[in-house]
Amino acid sequence: MRFFNFEQAARDAGIPANRLKDLEAAMRSEFPRDEMMCELHVLRACLAIKDGMILLEDALRAEPAADGISGSTG
Image (cartoon, rainbow, N blue to C red):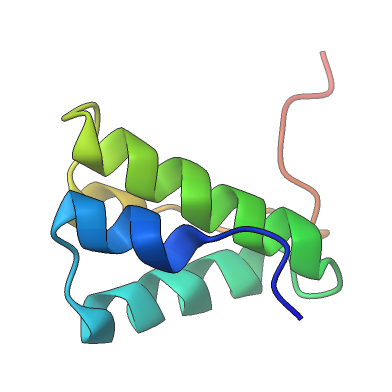
């Protein structure tokens, strides 16, 4: 089951299917237990790439959080 249509966003951003798989894997390593958050971050990365805010290579270089939870704690 898919929560978000990130595949269409990836096509709109010109991201090839093989690179989308890499992006999914990177986000899955960041959110291994939360499919919705993984998909949301793939979608957000695709939209940011489409808008020229980030390069695909930069999105793929994102480092996973140690505990699988992303974000600042203050």
